[in-house]
Amino acid sequence: MSHALSLLHDFNTVIHLSPECNGFRAIPSPVPNQKDDHIQHYEVEDQLHFLPRYLWSGNVKYTADFLPQHDGCDITVHAPGGLTSHTRWRLTREAVVAETGQAGSENKEFAKDLTDEDGTGVWYVQIVSEAACSLTYANFVKGFLKDSHQKLLEAYVEKVKEGPARA
Figure 1: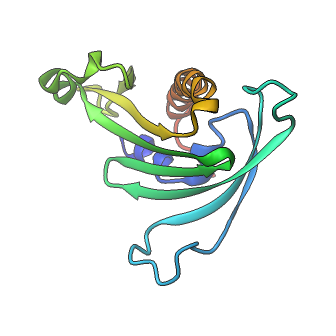
Figure 2: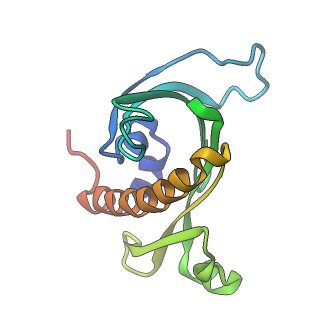
């Protein structure tokens, strides 16, 4: 699963799993003298489709804090309208999911299409998100996150199945 994990450690790959991503650029830390120098900061621009045009049309820019972890990555998004979301991507063994009973949880989604390079085990991709926003946008955000997570999982599994890029 080294290839699968390396994909989750690359912000360019993770952010472009979304077809709505127009691009991104690295930015300095918004917090001077930040203690965790492993956090990478980006400004991201996405196409915005989930709000009616009279509320917002075109593109949206937001900041994203990206932190690679030993088993995936964490992404915190700060977007207009007071939206803050925390998303954790994890690669998890089948046995761990079965033991904890997490597979049935509402806020977790899994893709069971990944097998070890040696074919001996099954891995899950787990996305866990929490979002905070004004009540005005709550229904839009909830629907968008649910829909986008499934698309992101499918795109990620396809990317893993493609295998490492050959030089």
